[in-house]
Image (tube, rainbow, N blue to C red; front, side, top):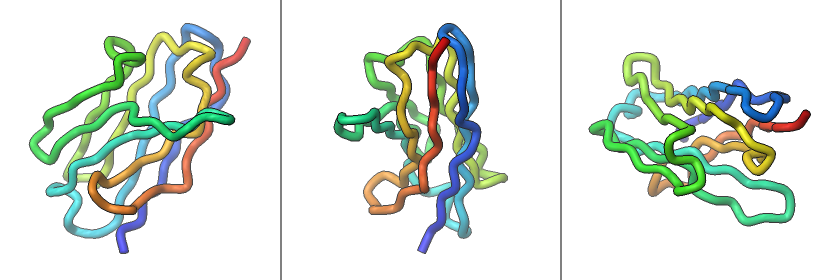
Length: 113
């Protein structure tokens, strides 16, 4: 069973930045397609960004140009750099291995003045 542990969330003012990280256990990380999802209070969980094993990326329209997903296969980690944060970005952010029911515990991002 792969374990995923997210970190890096917190309280940030509108316009600020945060960098989320997800550490994965095991030796198969480099072949996984990875993703970040988020779930705001009272809303469905939604895909934010994804990165393939080969490094191809895609983003939700709402975060294009502001968020960047990246991976470090040597460290078994995937990151989400979030810039120009808005109140609408407030949510719990989850790391996911695409195609598997494998999720981290989530990290809370609160964008508020």
